[in-house]
Amino acid sequence: MRIWEQGLVATYSLPGYKQMILDHYAQYQRADTQIVIHGVRDDASAMAAKIAGRAVNYAYLHRFHDTQIIENVRRAEREGYDAVMIGVLQDPGLQVARSVVDIPVIGYGEVSMLTAVMHGSRFAFVCINPDMDPLIRAMIREQGLEGRAAPTAYMECGYPDLSDAVGGKPEVFLHAFKAAARKAMREHGVDVLLPGQTIIAELLWREGIRELDGALVLDPRLPMLRMAEMLVDMRKAGFGTSRRGFFWQKPPEDLERGVHEFYATSEKFSDG
Image (cartoon, rainbow, N blue to C red):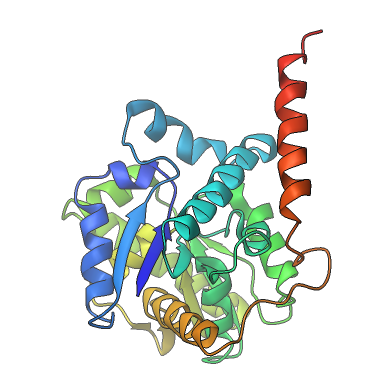
C-alpha cells in the first residue's frame, strides 16, 4: 500500500522535521505500507518557506494552496498511490479533492475531530496562530461538531519556538502548550486535546505526552494512518465514494477538459 502525505512547504524546510514524521509513522504502519511525504511544491526554497505560513492568513491566497493540493492529489492517483493524507490542520482542498479522484483522501483536522468524539465529551484544538481561527471554526461547523468543540486554545509562543523545539530545546513550547491546554480544560470542560499545527503533534509525540491532568492528548498520526489503510481496504472490497450531490459528484472528463481550456484561453486575454 502506497500512501501520499500532503503538507504545506515551510514546515519541511525545518532540518529533521520530515524524518521526524516518518519515524513517527514507522511506529504504527503496516509492513506493506509505504508513506511518501510531499509539500505543496517539492522544494525547500527560500520563497516557498516565506509564503507558506503567511498565505494561509488570506482567503484569496489560501486558494492557491487549495488548488495546488488538489492537483497533487490528482497526481498521486495518476502515479498509483492508494490514498492521500492531507497533513494540514485546516484540511485545505479536502472536500473538492474527494470529488475528482477515486482513491481515499483524508484530512488531519477531520480525522482528529472524529477520533476525539469517540474518546471524550468535548475537544479543543491547541494552536499557535490565532489568524487561522475562522478556518478552524469553519472546519468544525462543516463537520457538524460545534456542540462537541470548545473554542480553540492558542499558545503564547510562535514558529521560532517550535523550530527551537525541533532542534532539541522544547521548554518554551511545552510550557506554552500546557498553559493553553489547562486553560481550555478549566474554562470549557475540555477532555480531549487536539494538537493544532501538525508540528505540534510531532513534538508532543517525541516528548511522550499522551495525557495532561487526565485529559487525552490525541496523537492524530495513528488514527490518520489507520483510517487511510481502512479506506483502502474498503475500496478494494468494493466500497467506493458517494457520487451524489454537489460536493461529491465527479465532473465528466469532457466538461472538465473544456473548463480548463476555457479559462486557460481567458487568461491569455485577461488584459484586453
